[in-house]
Amino acid sequence: MAENTKTTEQIYAEIDRVYRINAEKVLNAFTKNRVAASHFAGTNGYGYDDTGRDVADKVFADVLGKEKAIVRYAFANGTHALSTALFGILRPNDTVLFYGEPYDTLKNVIWGKSGSLTDWGVKAIIADALLNIPPQTRVIYIQRSRGYLLRDSMSVSEINLVINVVREIYPTVITLVDNCYGEFCEETEPDADLIVGSLIKNLGAGIAQTGGYIAGRADLVEQCADRLYTVGTGFEIGCTLNSTREILSGLFRAPSAVASARKSAAYAAEVFKNMGYDTYFTNDITLIIKLGSADKLKQFCHTIQANSPVDSHLTPEPWAMPGYDCDVIMAAGGFVSGASIELSADAPLREPYCVYLQGGIDFEMARIAIDRTAAAIGHK
Image (cartoon, rainbow, N blue to C red; front, side, top):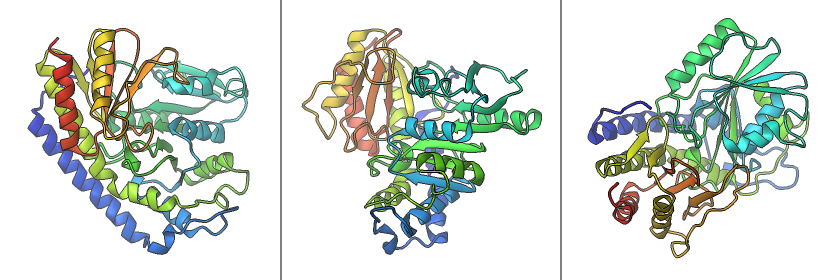
């Protein structure tokens, strides 16, 4: 793990600098694409001629620096968007190389018994290097965040270094980045052929109630749209009902929300470090705190939940969350269920008992919850 030698004040200043850059980028995309009140009127039925949907796609593409994007409430979560992308661009007998361990919830998509990539005839391998990759490799998949692994999240520069190597040595191979938890944490997004993320994380700002996006090369995004809907009609159908206002409003507020979440993580890192705990905070909105015991881990999540705006009276308990190989405890008292951009804490019930703190769309509110949680946990 990289050791951060910056002071908290220096980290705050850097967060504010990146915030301003991304805020200008978002505002420019809205004005360039002439977002209008009329675009908020949702469609029903087939969703033909949905100008709001089309404008939202263009705004997201511009903000993310890509040729094309598809952003929809039809994506149930980030894993669904990633699954759609993988099935959209891979074909039987192709190989996908995962550059590092894939996120827990994606493993069923890859190796599950029925309907998975491998069941469909795709070979999936995990590698920590790009030497001698199989000749049938069509996609190299890079995960920006850590998942529940105790490692640094990847920076955009690190991701782009991998992508540049791939393009130089394997020019026909597609690069795909799981961008969840990382959007707007740096000045730019990864220069991959496809980037994929969730709207109940960074880019939804706690406003989007569900959804996800896929952005990148136009031909690849069109394949993904066909996979989400039907071949040949991917961008022509799919009613929005009343989702476009929330999607665009969430994106507009996302630079501010991400900056607040980053500051919340930096503040918590300083608090718990001073209490003797190992903390890890790098290139996304997530802070890892190594608590060292199941009891402290549970108490941490209980206290975060007790200081949340929604369901504060409930006590989270470990449970067999779908897609994970062990019980997981999650404090998530937000306005959108599972919205990681709102202050939340979750962890697998396994050694070394690390809790993953993320989000905080209001920095001062998050500080209150963090201070009370620190008091409840006590020094190491």
